[in-house]
Every structure is written in C-alpha cells, then in structure tokens.
Image (cartoon, rainbow, N blue to C red):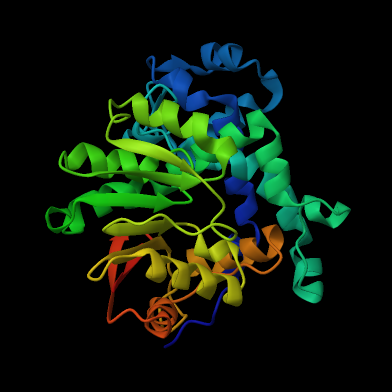
Length: 336
C-alpha cells in the first residue's frame, strides 16, 4: 500500500536558511579556525568566541547535527571536511566565499521575489550603484572578493591542472584572473608553462602578491586591461573562469569572439564555471546560482554546456567539448 505524501521535504527546503545561516555565522565567528587548535568543551569554546551563554550550546549542537562539528565526551572538534576547508590557517581554506555570501548575498536574497517580478538586480545597484564599481573601489572589499573567487574556483583549478592536456601547450593567459588561483594551480603542476593574468589594473597588486607567494612571479606576469574595451592578449590557451555568467547573452558572445580572434590557429579557449545540465533538471546549485546572477547583475545568467558550445561554434571554433571538473563545475573547451 502506497504511503500518502508528507510535507517533510517541503518544510526542510522551506526552512533550509536556518542551517545555512548557522554555518555562515560559524564561519564569521571563525569557530573552525579556533577548533583547529584542538577539541574544546562548550564553556571554553563559548568564551573563545565571545558568545552569550543563552544559546551557545544550541548553536554548537546544531553544528554537530548539521555535520559541521563532531562532539565526543563533551568536547567539540572539527570534522575532517571543516578542518581542511574552513580553517583560515590552511591553504585549502574556502571560507572566503562563504564570508562573502554572509556579508552580501544573504540579505539580498530576501528580495528575490521583487527581482523575479522586475528582472532587476536587488543589490546596491537598486540605489543607482554598480556592483563592480563598489567592489573595485574599496580595497578591503576587493581583497575579500578576490579571495572568494580563488576559494570558489579552487576545486576546478586543481582539476583543470590535472585533466587538461597541458603538455601540448606552452602558454596560458587567464582572462579575468582575479587573484590568480587558476594560474597558480596550473603553474605548480606544469613547470614548462608561462603566461599571465589579464584583469583590471586595480587587481594587479593582489595578483602579483598571490602568484609571487608561490614562487611563480617570474613565469606568470600581470597584464592590465578591460576585456570589453581592450583586445585580449594572445596565448596558446586563454581561460575564463566564472566570467561569462556575469554578463548578458550579447556580452557573452562578444567575449567568446574576442578570445577566438586573439588565439592562434590550434589555440584553445577554456571556459569553466558551474554549468547547468543540458536537461535543466538536476544541477539545482547552478540554477540557484543563476538566480544569484539576477540579484547581483543587470543581465547575467548561467547556462548549459550545449549553450556554450553553440556560442563557441558561432564564433568560429572548429571543435568543442564539455568535461566535468568537480562538484557542479565543468569546463567547456573550444579549439580554433
């Protein structure tokens, strides 16, 4: 006999923001960095974090129930995942992206309904401001944004370093390079490669510092420019990571065409970011990310691998293919 449907899944999804904000607050409080020093009891941990005693125990145990902390014999500790990825002292830290979500996206998502009705962004641009102008004019916000881009791209950058046939190419330039996360991961794995990162001049010092910290400053240089107003530099491989989804369809096609024009015969455009499955049924994370583009940009949206392959072929690329990287991310490869 079939059981009648229950509201469990509906309620779980409807109240999912409870768990999300609990994790984001834990990252903000740096609880995982503190616990990386060793297990602590509730009283010690509460004092370390400066929390009021009223709900501290509920907060800690909620993180246990959510799978973000372990508790044994009254002592709280990180899980293997949170110890690796949410301890600020480790190079594998991805909390920068979550911090940005906490600082900016969490509040703006409260206006999703308005955005769906108007088609307009729901961030600072509601007051006539441009989101990129805001981020790039404030050194602290820019540094945080650059770190967040490195964090969100880390899994893909490592996968690209391993999966792409770099032995067949000599030079790489990352378009919209931000801090240089892809450059570093590929450069570490393939000592024969040279090239650089192309981005707005204000990001240059951040790129140079990050790349130099890995001893790669001599091989990979910063190239200042604007990818809409300037010609793109040439290399065997041009990459665009988490770039195209910021822009409308015409702008996406413009960037792909400019990359095609800059590449030598046999050169490759490598586009990577979260890609919607072609049937638009399974990759919920990316569909929600595309709604974030509604909230954050004037025309941006995420897309399927088939969409991107079609735009590449329209620009003149003779071969295209899609390869999965990590999690919701894939790379779309176009060969000139």
